[in-house]
Length: 138
Image 1 (cartoon, helix red, strand yellow):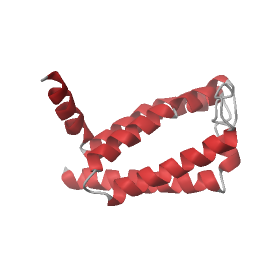
Image 2 (cartoon, one colour):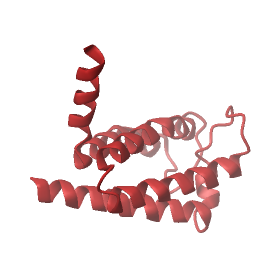
Image 3 (cartoon, rainbow, N blue to C red):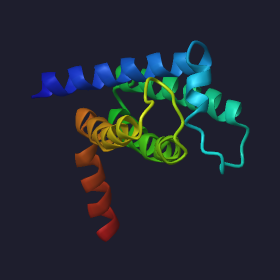
Image 4 (cartoon, rainbow, N blue to C red):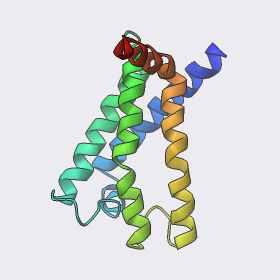
């Protein structure tokens, strides 16, 4: 099981670094479609900043063993934080990444919770969260 979790963590880290790099270059315009119009920030800044965060999180997941669980929590929180962008893409019917129908955009929404669980499970962060909650109750 530990091997499977490590493989899952490394794959998630690689995917984040890859996505982050594409935020800065090849898919920058596509990612603009996911920035909610109500967000009071320059859309291009949001795309670049989220790309940098993805790169840092991905590298942390792969290379920073000491804080692996914390990186898992931060990655899960990042996936939660960007979820409004996915919702905006759906509600505003914005085409990007081949998501050009309401059905495709709706299906995409279902994968965000999977990413949150993936980040927490693959890093052992569920145990870390339980420990934090137990300490808070004392």
